[in-house]
Length: 122
Length: 122
DNA sequence: ACAACATGTCACCATATGGTGACATATGAG
DNA sequence: CTCATATGTCACCATATGGTGACATGTTGT
Image (cartoon, rainbow over all chains, first blue to last red; front, top):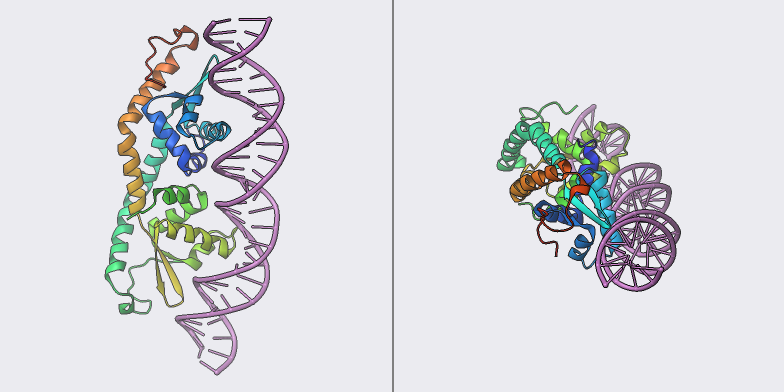
């Protein structure tokens, strides 16, 4: 369903948009309602953010008369998280232990290049 | 450890930086090595990305002589994912089922405003 | 029908961002 | 010591981005 992870990550990179998604995760809201949530922003700014979210498939928009209802679509978020975690969980673990080893051995104790627990860098 | 989730999310919003993290999750690499991974980018561009990642605490930098080693710090990623998931898992579930209900009931069948499974919009 | 309400669209703007080349500095190798 | 290697720093640039106000369009309520 999420065609473009890049668009999803990019959309999540902005705090206002994450805040919008927070609100929508509680219940759907009309655009006008969301505008009141951000009194420091003008309406069109909020609409722009919603546009980004819609293009990233993070929200589903339903028009009812003059009301535009915005619904959270949780699937892309779950997808990128799952994908990220499944890709990295073993790597994350080994990276963490490696990081721990680096942190615990002072730099000056290192041999020149031999015996380092590092893989080929080239 | 991750002082600023905004910085983490923002850092993850860029595909090059996510790619860098992918590589570092396998094993640490020197800056020069990472530069060779992105032959389409000039060195300083890669360094800029690493700077963003470092400022977001997503990598730990260790200087060894003229080599700069970059290590993945998996903690902030795990933190924002955990926080995001824990905050939204129940909301995500209810939002998903609500979305499903919206998708399954044609718009014109809706009563005016009464009986809608929506909460107070204000 | 008309006014109020809600949203859509567009042009503009200041700042941010991802990228570049050039110069500088530090370390390593011979 | 000199040269090679690796990185640091800076200024610049084109494009992107988050924001604004104004005008336009569609729907609802009276």
